[in-house]
Image 1 (cartoon, helix red, strand yellow):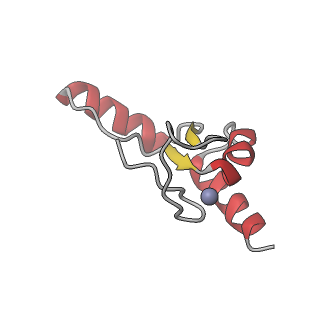
Image 2: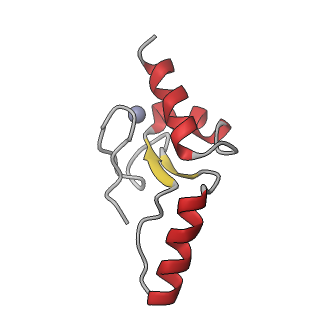
Length: 84
Ligand SMILES: [Zn+2]
């Protein structure tokens, strides 16, 4: 697993210590993500899924609302929102 650093604002946070928590959000899998999972399963590796990212408390709620999208679509929207 990657260390918990928000993919939008790059704020580092600690899940257990944060009062209002951020967290890991799993998005819709793309074709390449399914391929990644197959490879991992075959090799018996455990890694950070390419369709999951950390979000700090500021971005966690909006990220969760977009988890029916793929990670690339969701990040585009979140980053755009963030610059407003
Ligand atoms: Zn953030």
